[in-house]
Image 1 (tube, rainbow, N blue to C red):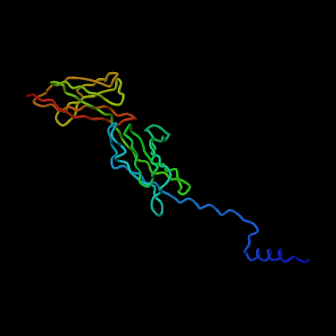
Image 2: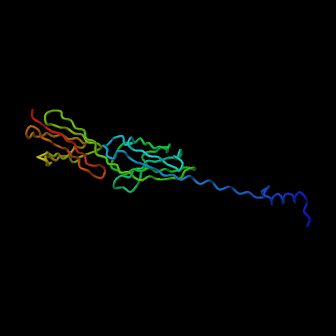
Image 3: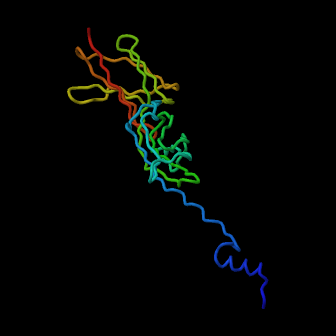
Length: 215
């Protein structure tokens, strides 16, 4: 069989790899691997404290840090099995989250990745939070207290120091607004007291120390 010159030239060129007869898409570049670091320089807080000031971390790569994609701060309340997003940082190279302390919980950072970087999740950090207690002493041995957050009918325990031991002096309940008031006896020239809000799943124990004295 005879082959015309133009067709023969095309076949020869194809055999040399100069003119492709068929094309295929090149494989997409694999996303660069990441690891997310996360830590807390302080792990015990009072309700409402600026938690974010003490949390830090970064999304790391083999050559530096990731510069795109979202990193979510997630919280797992004590007693729960569900992680919840509470804040996001869209500049994940060095992490910052503007959040406040609300309750006892585990925290971690979940980086969702991007077309360039693969996702990763940090180890969890355990954060403990105690209730906020405000005490006033308007006169004499009378004290008034307010507990936050909601502490309707919550228990308030007062102990007195006798020698080197603390002994129960009084137990009462806050009102529906989380407020309470009480007076104290003065034993000797000075009496040391401490007020305790018991711990539960949501909050660690709150302890406030004070004293009464005779003029």
